[in-house]
Image (tube, rainbow, N blue to C red; front, top):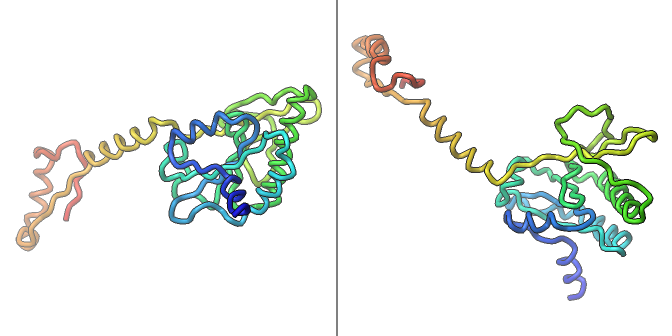
Length: 219
């Protein structure tokens, strides 16, 4: 029973937008396994996460969570794309993303970010600046993930914040779909009209009909 309890507490379960927003209030590093309901979270990484939490979390700056992309608007870009995907949130900002269950890369990323948080807390380094991921940055990313870039020993490191969807994205998508539906009209021509050769005449009259300004599909 105790083992099962520890497993439940390993990763916070996030399955709606309000829980996601609350998770972003975590201090330190939160590693988020983004999944879809049909496949569930990545079980292959749980042993690694448990090991890292036991080794690195004495100061409670390391958190783990699983987030269901289907019900969280912010995670809309990852729907149908979870392979899995791991997001790294530092003080509420998504600073890195790793595709796939790449245990060595995930391990390194977690250790690096936790060590940085400890150095920042101890006053040994300045918190890296946040820049938008789509801004031009004269840096080379470590292969395998998107996010933090090192600018060399003579520069401060920077976090490239990964921008996700906001709460208005889903509504915008629905409006876009409605507009697309209005652009197309379907005209079904009866077989007898085809036999008698009237299809050309029917198509010629189309611009003056109620279909004008739309893209007709002829059947």
